[in-house]
Length: 286
Image (tube, helix red, strand yellow):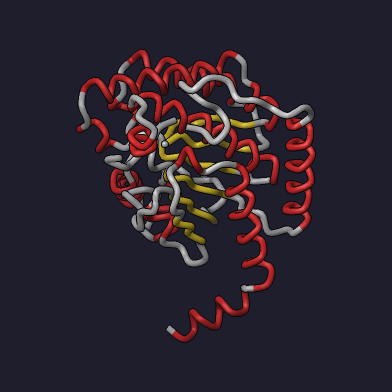
């Protein structure tokens, strides 16, 4: 989708203006073999994150860095997202949540907002029309956030995508569009208060049950690119849970390819295989 929160994501492989890449004979077969081997290794560790969140930051800076138009940076970010998601689902991730558009992004220039909306519509239609990724991995697509802020034509494309994939049960893709963590908490509080009026007590569990991610595995791993050390109002309730790993990466989103993602997943598996005792001890010392 887009670079979500930054006031400021291309592809390591897919060029947008520089002409076709040159591929070595058999390179894609070798990559597919390596991806399959890696995925089997990670799954065998029994420490695959069930739920991964992505703050896909750096599309606009990537465009400036390469003297591209902003829309080309966002297009590049989408291609990067597609490759990252494929690796995650291949490795056994059950839920991926991507920050596709912040409510705050409506404050950007009308031209950029229109470009982002057009990109979102085209990519959502792509999911609906060919379904290569969703069908291969059994992915149910959900748009979460303040959907009432979207135009009717965008909502129609979202509805078509969710309807087409609603019976898929192997994995889920949450597209946060438009979204902020604060708005999600307000939404959950409103639902909790309504339950309280009906006699239920308000607790953390009550709020959990009214989040946009209710009923899904809890967040295990949150990844942010672009070298920025903040959550930018993304899944702030979920990320506060004990045990969530947060990876802050010093690269722009389009530069974050499958190899880097593989390394992050390997680190997660290692930490959770061999570092659990140390983590508990550290918590006890605080």
